Length: 209
Length: 121
Image 1: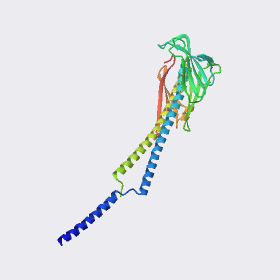
Image 2: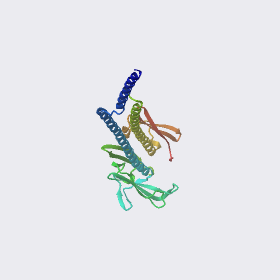
Image 3: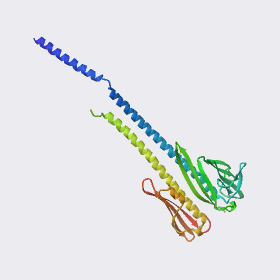
Image 4: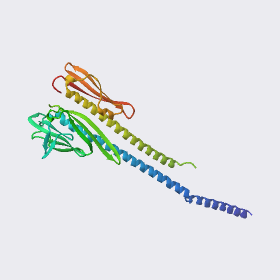
C-alpha cells in the first residue's frame, strides 16, 4: 500500500512536472505572432524613415546656410575690393588695358587709378597702378596692373562666380572728375530649388583726389 | 505587461537624438541670421563713417538718425550718428546701428572715428 501510494504519488508528481515542463518549454519556444512581427517591422520602418528624414532636412538646412553665407561673403568681397581700390584712387579712368585686353569704365566695370606705393608704404611719385573691378556674366574679377616697384601685384582675381547683378554709377559723366562711385551688387545662388540672395549697396568715395 | 527598461532606454535615446538634432538645426538658422544682420549693420556704420570722412570736417552734419536703403535688410533697423567735439579741431563720430535680433532683443553695433579740421589721420 505504501509502495502503491508512493508509486501513485510519484506518478502524479511526474505527470505534473512533465506537464509543467512541457508547458514552460512551449512558452519559451513560442514564435512571434504575425501581428507582433508586423508591428515591429512597421515601427522600425517609421523610425528609419523619421531619422533619415531628419538627416536629409538637417543636411539641406546646413547646405542652405552655407550657401547663404558664401553668397553674402562673395557680395562683401566685391564691396571690399571696390572700396579698397576707390579709397586709394586718385581718379576713375575711362579705359585701361589689363594684360592685353582693353576694358572701359561703365556700368559693369570700374577702373581706378591709384598712386603706386612701394614695399614700405611710401608713394612712388608719378607712377600709377590701375585696379579694375569687372563683371562678366555671373563672375566678378578684380584686375590689377601695377608698375614695377609697386607693392601691388599684377593679376586677375575672381571675387565671385554667383553674381546676379552689378552696377557702378558715377557722380559725374566725365570720368576724371568722378569723386564717388555707387556700387550696387546682388549675389544669388540656387540650392535645391531655393534661392539664396544677398544685396549690397555702397558709396565709395575717392580719397586721393 | 509594461515596457521593459531596455525599451524605455531605446525610446528615450531616440527622442533625445531627435531633440538634439532639431535644436541644432534651429540654432544654426538663428545664428546665421544674427551674424548676417550684424554684418549688414557693420557695413552700414562703416559706410556712413567713410562718407563723413570723405565729405570732410566742414560739412559734418549734426548728430541724429540717418537712413540708407540697406536698413531695410534689418528687422526694425535704426541708424544714427553722434558727433561730439573731441577737441578744438577734432570731432569724434560714432555711427551706431541697432536692429531686432532673432531672440527678440535689440542688438547694437557702433564704430567710432575722429575727423580733424585739417589733414588726415
